[in-house]
Length: 197
Image (cartoon, rainbow, N blue to C red; front, side, top):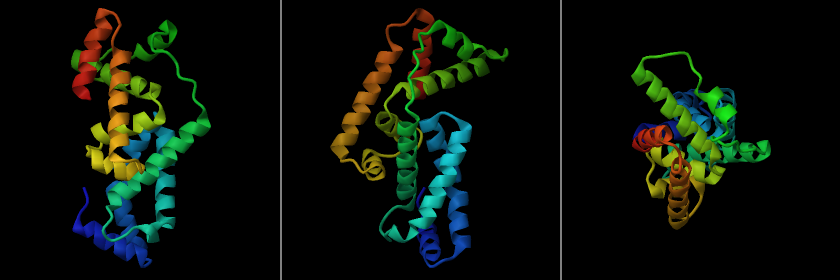
């Protein structure tokens, strides 16, 4: 993701070139939005978070060091903002096993089988992610949606490599526990989710 051109654009933006910063926004708006969406689970909240991330990045641009990855630095701002927002929101986690909730979440207009399975898997993944603590959700999103290495995740979150490994291990274990112990239909769906992860 990071290129020599990024470093050049960051340098120019640090000198006050707004056009250079706009080009960085164009390049990274989708990864930042995707991270925010996976963390917050809502398109409007993700848009607000992405906008706030870029505002904060612009205000703190002087802090980016030449040897530092701009992408990692930017995703770190987004991740911390999303975690703060989740903490303020004080979400009450809802059980997937709640029949009324399941019926609402699983009732979509009829689609072809493949498309329906894809949407069902996406919904289930979102529901499972929402049940994880924000710190665990963040490492899963960075690892599987942003393909960051353990070391990159550590730089993004500010944790040690060991702490990231522990969080990722616990997150996987929690996801596996959430997917197990269900009926045959859900077990089949869980297999699809594991393939996606």
